[in-house]
Length: 266
Image (cartoon, rainbow, N blue to C red):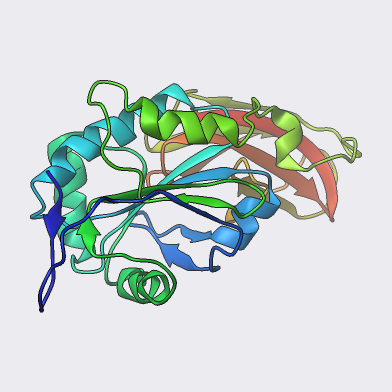
């Protein structure tokens, strides 16, 4: 059952699914510190399952399980699941995620949740919680898909698949240049939870830079490396703050790509 927050009289009626080409742009920062931009995600060809919810909403417990299933089932595809609370702090949301074993992006007050909520209340009828919608890559939105069938939520998956889904390949990292100054490099463990061990051999002078990119080609992390004198070098990269997903480690020497290594963050 949906939770309703209203100050004045609620007029009960049928909930209508609205499809619009004018979804407003917005951005928010999730509990992992990653900023998500709707315009950037749509430009990358992604489709978004968007939820507005809050911690004490009983009906939101069931929707969370369904969203986690979608997040897992469409991993590796051009699908993102975003859940936004206009009322809860990041600390409350972290506890919510841990309690329900959730791994999709979730943002609250500190990450701009209230601002996003106001954007949508200005453009859509946003009075019920949870409100789940699907935004396609062309900017069209199937708004407030309710009710849904527990145990799969085909009412959400149908519009999502109608957006046009495809499996993301390493080409999505947007690196088309060939490796120009190759070095011998390896990483472990892979998959990794917190500490990624990088071993490499780099001959000659020149600074080495390690950069981590997400699947949309966005740079997440940068670290300077010791170039060495030809011997085997070892560095530890702290990836504990990265969200679950696939990432690319790019090693460059004087601006030229030296190695590209893909890894999975658990």
